[in-house]
Length: 316
Image (tube, rainbow, N blue to C red):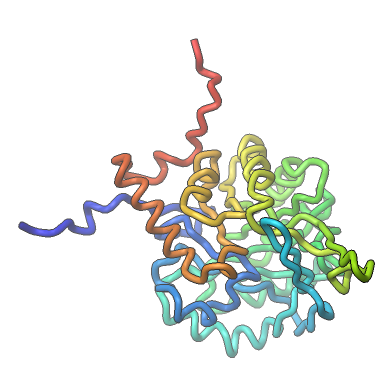
């Protein structure tokens, strides 16, 4: 008797604004390094996409320690976008990633609109890059980041500037630290974004009661992990109702069940972040879990799951 062929497997492929993925599981920027760090633990070729650690034009040392603190059901970080700069990435990091059959998405950050634009120009002419993720949402830096993502006009201007110089799909990453995240989502859609990812971390802090001092040197950090999943899920669902471009769900995803929740509320794909620190093989487990769920329910295509939230509105 012949074994099951690949044609019998459920179809998990998705399209994120022109970025074609074999499955909806992506790694979240800042939690997966530049890919090589996790290669001993997973099959990189099985990932939908790798989103590399955020990059700026010039190297950044990041914030002084202590800059990571574990919290109940989560983690505070104040890394401050430490990175080697775009030139070192292209020369030393990208060649390793190019050997794999996986989409490479570069997360970019700047302190001015012109810096975002220049990064996009450089990457647009770089072989091996499949999409850009524009970070306008980091709460751990003094300039740029959150200040751009909290203002609809600034979010629009950065998106438009990046889109004006690149043919790559552009995903804009949103902050939850705003009054109306859907308003920001509409602004970046108007600016030409091909997709949106949300959420980045929530602002938080932690105090050592013995010394009375904050645990983080910069006092405030970004909260991630399972503690924020209900907030992220609600915001993804809210944004899906307001925009027509694909949405990528991020925030506290630890299992296939968590990922499926985001797909059901309308996310086209998901990013796995803090979970990578706890279990380096978690992305493989999530891919396997999604496939097993589809097989068990005889779902042939993952689009039969996406956006199927049953709110009970159709009751007689």
